[in-house]
Length: 294
Image 1 (cartoon, one colour):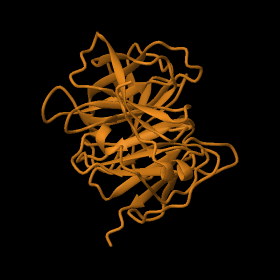
Image 2 (tube, rainbow, N blue to C red; image 1 turned 180 degrees about the horizontal axis):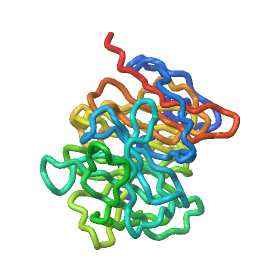
Image 3 (tube, rainbow, N blue to C red; image 1 turned 30 degrees about the vertical axis):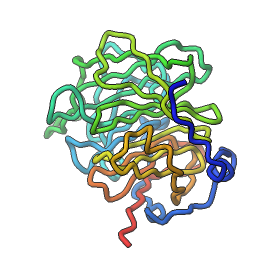
Image 4 (cartoon, rainbow, N blue to C red; image 1 turned 60 degrees about the horizontal axis):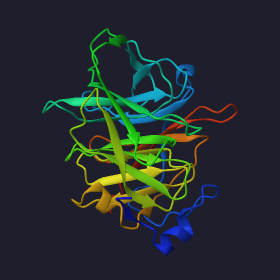
């Protein structure tokens, strides 16, 4: 396999368990501050979160498998401001979304990732890419009928993945396997032509498991991955993603969520947000982790 192994013993000793959280070893970001409780039943199975570039201060979310083929624009109080429906598309197993660069310069795009595969039986994964909608006065719903469909497979076979990230500098896309130990990071190099069946190649392995979400900062300098127990932080420092991931990550403060599968950096770089699915009998919050300006 053409990837860099990241199997440092010290990292492996503290980070590979998905059953027990690991104490934070970094104060780069402050502990969570809950902003709003999630109560809207339309968002029971939130599996992806992305800060909007076209609508600063708002967020895109989606639900996972067998829910409507819709993405929702929310404010910090978790009010749905806009519902966008993808025409002619089924939510097979949507697991994440990302806002990032695309074919046209100075335009931001939304990438909806139909990449889940709990039983590792699906040969192909799908990304739906369209220009990021802007919130217009009085509009609460919109149908998206023009979008690109990017079809890809993993080079080494079918696997469950729940993370999509885009590098703003290279426009390369990344996904991460979920259920293995170690997990593998896969890269789709730009340009990725709609209509072709592409191959995502492994470029790094990490001694982690159960990776359910990830995000690259708006300036491309930082990367976060999370599982159900911990958040891992890399400073890329101008390095390509595969090279940057060879460093040992910092383990950040994390308030464990009922079923936390969504994370995004803020647009302005002041911190990051997490959001969980709704679980009966437990409260779910949009949490903000502010950057520690020490």
